[in-house]
Length: 274
Image (tube, rainbow, N blue to C red; front, side, top):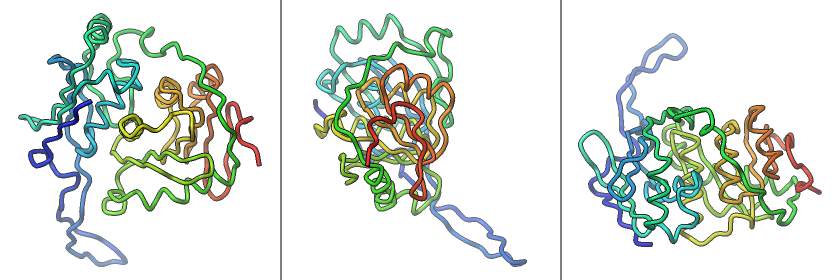
């Protein structure tokens, strides 16, 4: 896969903005870094498939990860090249995918406008909202202490969050809790897609560790994780009822409220053992 990103032409990931801070009865002029959010169109073989609102960071990984998590391609090798290009009104992530995958994409193509807060905006029908999910592999078990070690290590990778306080993160950990990768975005689904793309491009096996996210666990995030074979998804906040049902059906271990040395295993907690 050839990766070309025109970094110099893309917007910055954060912008310095002026404001007035009010504290203890006094106002002060301030200048702060604010996370950027721009329209990003994912374009396959010259055809625009979807427009998401995202942080202009790790966009090549975003394109590859979205392609994998949405089942557009089966492996990163089917994305022959990817290029992020600044255009009027936003950014295009232009990808060339294998011809048979593009034919299949055209058959089920949906034009939708994604929003920061959700992952299913604009699907054509109710049938498209929930995909058939394969069973994720069992893989090695993980100690609860390792799960919390990964969360404890995540802030060191949240560089944009430290500056802006406005982005989510998704991280990838080895079974022992050592964090290897982390990606950030204003959208939690985007952060997970960026992580999935980064893993695929760097050759990490999806069943060889677990993912942690600094958000709630939605059904769409469970679908994305299960589609690529991630076996444990741990969220710092709550899951939805549908997310739990999909995790049960796909053999994915779903963890919520992972904070302060506590967590709740909502599906397939058998993989978490001392």
